[in-house]
Amino acid sequence: MGSLLIRDVDEEIVQRLKLRAKLNRTSLQQEATKALRQGTSLTGAERFAVVEEARRAGKLPKVTVVGADIVRAIREDEDEL
Image (cartoon, rainbow, N blue to C red; front, side, top):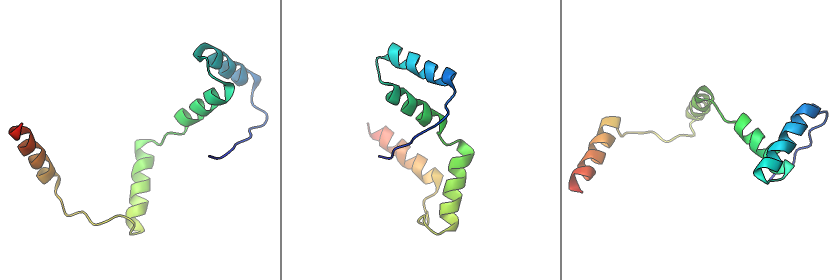
């Protein structure tokens, strides 16, 4: 796991993180990590861009299955239950 040192953080942000840590009975580091994780989630458009880049680079396998075939197979499995 990597390490990150952040300098000159606004005191108000530090205090909010400390309050959250106290309320959640966690450490300041855990709260900061949680906030960074939530703030760095990829948007749908960013995820699409990652997939498109991988596709252009030839890093994705060719897909020969049609979506309708997948739905049909799922429905057939449900019918057997």
